[in-house]
Length: 239
Image 1 (cartoon, rainbow, N blue to C red):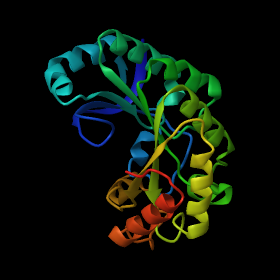
Image 2 (image 1 turned 90 degrees about the vertical axis):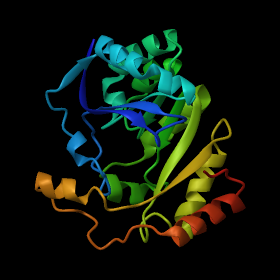
Image 3 (image 1 turned 120 degrees about the horizontal axis):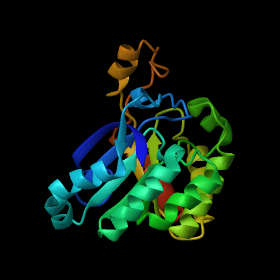
Image 4 (image 1 turned 180 degrees about the vertical axis):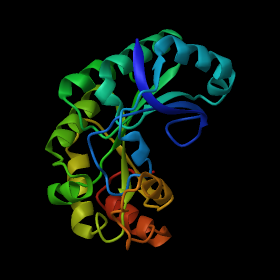
């Protein structure tokens, strides 16, 4: 089976536990204003097969095993190619390779139901808890995404990823809404706080796209500390 992909990182250290083989699939239906990989939005023509990926993983397997790592499929949005990801993860599980899905959750529920049975863990990127803020940042409502987050938390180990964007999604009201969502999930879920940065701006320039957040500064330690404190005050686990 073939999948459309953007790139591969054979030594990823931030997208799941241990050292990871990170496959970035291409294609995404969100248009996040703070995206640091806008070059993954278009599906493109580059394809790769499940067999090619497995062969590549075996070359570096000792590093993944020694670090308790595995494979992470990211994007783009991997759930747009749910059949491919499910087939890949199925084979990885047979070879005892730990599998992590890195998703925005913006996909039909049947897509996430195909992949989760073969996913050891899910990194679920929630852009904003408030619907209006989410629409501003991504162009889409978050109702489907929140339903999928609830589904994912009922079927797999989930970590919510939240990028702190100063002045946009880090107010006390926004974080209170976030804590309410997390507390209603069917299992205990930690929130990984990620500071917004502008390192991807050059890609917007290369693509000839105007950067949507030109006046927004990167989040600093105080921004992260404040959000962490508000969440911990609501008994939310942060990492």
